[in-house]
Length: 89
Image (cartoon, rainbow, N blue to C red; front, side):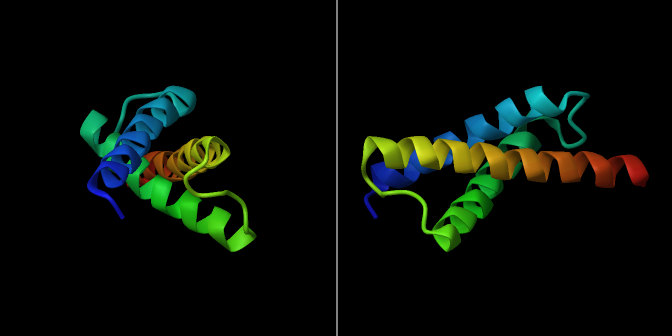
């Protein structure tokens, strides 16, 4: 994997984490940096789920769109879970 590809992947995940916080709302229990880290982890979760489903075509524009959607979906899940876990404690 080229270095620029990794940088783009990390940036997409970080932005997805911030967007997910906007959808979920409330104050971030781990701050904006925490949301960005959860977004990157969400990108991994979403990408893995899409790969299991056989969706996406790496390296194409459609693949980039699917990557962004998968990262956002995974980030939404992880940011929501972090909010639920933090509130219950």
